[in-house]
Length: 78
Image (cartoon, rainbow, N blue to C red):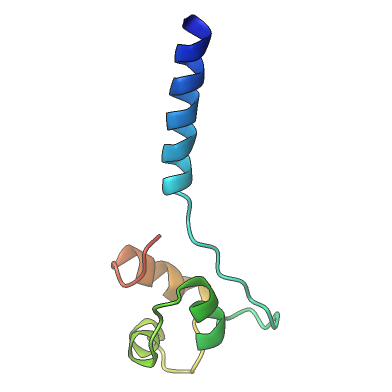
């Protein structure tokens, strides 16, 4: 009984941790920023309009700070 309870608690604890895991965006071309294609791979609902909102400096790429700000401001899920 005790073992089953511990296993159950660990299972739910790990499930909660996985739900809070941050979405990983891959910089596939290695340039240090993210293109709309790279963001779309992580966030399938990415639109050109949303990308423009996230790309605060308007350079056509999203850097790590812009990505973090988008997550903190609710533009993207964590």
